[in-house]
Length: 172
Image (cartoon, rainbow, N blue to C red; front, top):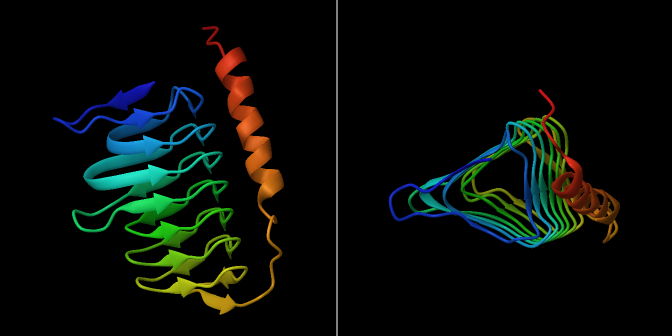
């Protein structure tokens, strides 16, 4: 696993979390219980803090960064899709950030919300609870998602993390 301290900044990873050997976690990063970080994802907490809640997953090739004044906070039960980029934003519980989407500085994604694939949520945009943010720049569609819409995905990835932690082995 590529987990690095940067000076006094040391990642805090819950023992039940899973970090794939090809992922990179640097500095001021906290991973909650049963969270998972998948191949080629980079979580770089060098300028500020990154917090990932319980049962959240950061999928392949996603990039999570922060700024000296803006942490990146991802709540419980969230999914960050493949190749997504989050920086200096807040994603509340049970939300889904779609494949190859971008969520920028001071954006706030409400609980049970969804950012669609390839969408760009520009700085300081607020996506209300249960809303969808679609397109570039993202347009908001309110009151379209039921609470729990991401529960199956977060449950699958929590189980996948347990399975990989127990069974993954390199054979070359």
